[in-house]
Structure formats: structure tokens, C-alpha cells
Length: 415
Image (cartoon, rainbow, N blue to C red):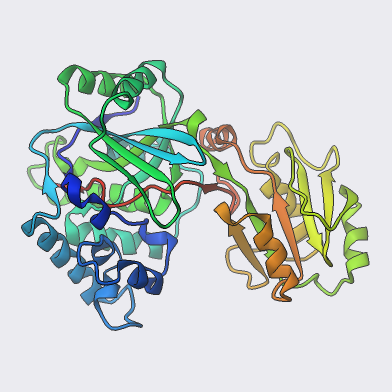
């Protein structure tokens, strides 16, 4: 049973939202954030990428940088660029990409649900990345950016969301960087608030789609605050962290592809021959070829595209990990043939995700930077949920969700 609560969001006045909003902290580097913020003093990058307030080259982990985040967060509130709502409420956040809209409920997710596994994860987290986000949550005493959850489809919640979606939104803008649409509605009606809370309570689990490090950091800081409070009762605001929850069927997961620097000493012919042990291999010519179904891959090598299909018996349909194309390609191509074992640390491989498409794979190989590229069919949300339910962990670099959540539309304070 998933516990959620409404909260008093801190957010920009309607007329300032496009000045404040930004991309998430982890999809761009410091210099890109510096360029995007430009001379806009209201940009949320001044809180989530606060190194841009210092001279170029300043480490994002410099203690002064975290202090600057808190200082700017306070200043944004003092100047009225961010204001706290006076009542606890839920919010609806809609994103439109390529004509398709997905609707998320912005809620306070329960720290204990993360600790006990009601909120399920499918990725490993790195302690150094967790600690960075924990410092950011601690110093601001707030979840500045939301995490991204999925929940099993729910008709009652969908009907409620659609009723609000037919009304005038509080925010409505197109993000200039990618052309995606973003809208926000406020659920302040007590009956609707009660409905949202009760419908989530019926769910056996919520699933982290994107933002595993932010989820871990938010939950760990909440648990830390509970331990430090001698009068802890369990209803304090720090027992919750901000999440945007989408119906699983609405989410778009894009392919997350691989480019490799060498063929492990093999010639192109030897590499193709080695692939034939576990795959049927078909030369598709020079036109870009995109995998059309599960267990189908496309290889780009020497200005030709090849269709690879995993042979029966090379994967286990009853194993939620073993059936994944990321696992098949990792085991049978990257590890067995190319001897690239650790995808997280190897310098011989890189990953191309999201909206860049197969043209980017072709470009990186044709430029000579990379020797070959491998395109995969996207993982499904059902596969992710099956893996999370089984308690297993996805192979690295398996999922790329798009569109990303914009930051700065709502912030959650921990007191």
C-alpha cells in the first residue's frame, strides 16, 4: 500500500515560470548550464547548478557551491520569484512530446515506503552521487527537484486527471530547448485530494522510472532527520519527498544505444563471423536500419547496417533480466566477443540515448571516433516493473525516459 500526501508547494508566480524553470541538474554539464542561464538571474540553475555563480572551472562539489544553492534558494523566496502555497494540495503536471501527452500527479511520497521497498527500484545507485544530492537536500532543507515514478494504470485517477485537464492550467509553456509542452494544474478540492490519497493507498507498489539517486538522497535525508529529532512523531514534512507519478502505460522509453571504439583485435569479417554463433546476421545495406521488435538489433559497421536477431536458446523468456535485449547484447556481443565486461567503467564503450537517434550512431562511427555501433529495441515499462517486482536490478544504461521532467515548477520544503 503506497502512502502519499498533499503538500504546500513552493513555486514561481505564473508570469515568472518561464524565467525560473530549467532542465534537470543531471542532463547537462556546468558550462551548458552557465550558457543556458546566461544573464537570467531567476534561472533555477542558480540553485541546482550553483557552480555557475562562481568562476568557470569551479567544482560542483566545492563546499561554497552547496552554500550558494541555499543562499540563492532563500533569495528567490525573498524576492518573490518563488512563493509557497498556503494550503496542502496535489498538482497535475502534463508533458507533451511529438503530439503525445502524459499526465503526472505531483505528490509527497513516503520515506518509509522507499525504505521498505513499496517504492521499487530497478537500478543500482552510487554512494558518491547519493551523497552529492543528500548535501543539496540538507543545505536547502527542501526537495528542489522531483523524482519520476510510475504507477499501475488506475481509471479513477485517470478520470480525475482528465477532468482537470479540460480546464485552464496554472502554467502552460513550451520549453525552448526541446520544443516540448508543459502544463500544471492545482488540485485543491478536498474531495479530490482525498480521492488521490485513497487510490494510491490501494496500490501495492510505486516504481522509480527515472531519478534513482534523487530518490535515494531524498529518502535518506528524511530518515536522517527522523533519527535526529527526539520528538519525532512520524507526521513531519521530512517524512515525505516530492515525486511526479505517471500511469505506466503513458510513459515513453526510448532506445539506449551503444558505440564501441574497437573490435577487440578482430577484423570486420571476423567480428561478423563471430556474431553468427548467437545471431542471424543480415546485411541491410547503407540505409539506416532500426530494430523493429524485441531481440532484434542493428549493427552499423563500415558504412553498412546489419540486422541481428538473437537465436532461440540465447535468452530465457522466464528470466526478467535474461530476456532483456540489453542483457543479451551485453553477454553475447560486448562481453563474449569484444571482452567489454564492466559497462560502467570501460573506456572502450559509450552510450547514445534519448532523442539523438540512429543518425548520431552513424555520425560517431563515420567520423572515426568509434569503430561500430549497436542499436537496441527499447525496454518496456512492463519489463521494468517485472524486474523491480522480482527484486532484481537492470543492466546499466538500459532505459532512457523522454521527456525529462522540468525543474522549478514545484519545490517541496521539508518543514
